[in-house]
Structures are given as structure tokens and as C-alpha cells.
Length: 227
Image (cartoon, rainbow, N blue to C red):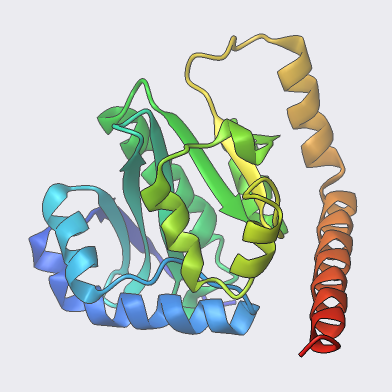
């Protein structure tokens, strides 16, 4: 693999030229995964750049390589690192991990008392989150801000989320609590078990996806009998 150096910095107004390619890649990546994310316009991404709430990865020659931004919910009580995306040509370089580390640092700097959370179906992202100190939690531990949950409406699995009264879905919820006891034995054990059993956890996620999708199809089949 070719050795490529990346510069990961806090995005600003000078990076607005990349906003369209970033949003297009976000959408195409979501479609490829068969999931959905809150659709964002180039203008929205540009606002995050103006606010200093995003990080961007560039190669030494200025080619866009990756991006991620911060969103605050519940009057700043919760923060999400959203829209993590790496350009297809620069995947397999460990860039996603580096971007996650930088956006996490920025989140802690801007929102030192906020809980940082994420929803994901990817084992790789779960592993990175675990390394940063996140632990798996239930959906009830996340923000109840209605604006956040509206973002799930563009996901192909939104019907599953609502059928579960927003308490479960294909995504796994993970949370970093800055006020949690750093030496809390139970949390540390959970985090270590999570990292050790990542492959097993990934298989569980796939099983969860299979079961939920099967139940949804069964429900649709039953409903069709009454139409």
C-alpha cells in the first residue's frame, strides 16, 4: 500500500469548496451500506465549518480525504460526532480512526461537560468508539431531543425504530460520559470485554439485523392479507 500522509485539522470557511463532494459521498456511502443517515446539504456542512465544529482530512497536495462534524442536542447536554466519511480512495489507511480521535478531542474541548454518543451498525466504528472510552448503552440513555430523532427519518430502517417505540433498532448505541468514574470496575470490564469480543459482537449485530428485518417482512406479509 502506498504511503500517504494526511493532515487532519479543524475545518474553516476556506474548506467550503469541499462541501458538495462531502455530502455526495455521505449519501452514496449510506446507500452502499443499505442504511441511512440524516441528509445534510452543502450549506449545512458549510455552517459547521464556519462554527469551527468539524474536522477535515486532506492529503499533502490538498485532496479531500475525510470529514466529520459535531452536533449538540438537548441544550448541549449531549453531543454527537456525525457524518464520519472517508473518501473511497483513502480507505484502508486507518484514516477513520484518526478522524474520530480528532473530532472527539474537539468535542471535549468545545463541550467538556457533555455526554458524547453515537449510533452505528459498523463493528469498526464500535471498536474505535470503545478505544475512546464509549460503552454500549440502551437507547433510553441517549438524548430525548426530538430534532435528533427526526434525523433517522431518512434511514431505511426508520420503520423498525418506530415499531420499537424508539427503544431499539439495527444500530448499536454507544456513549461517553465525562463524569463517569474513570476507575469504575464494571465499566472498564465491559469496555475490555467489548474489545476482546468484537468479532462475536459483530456477528450478534448481523443476527440482530437478520431477526429485525425478518420480523418486519413478516409484519408486512400479514398486513397485506388485510388489504
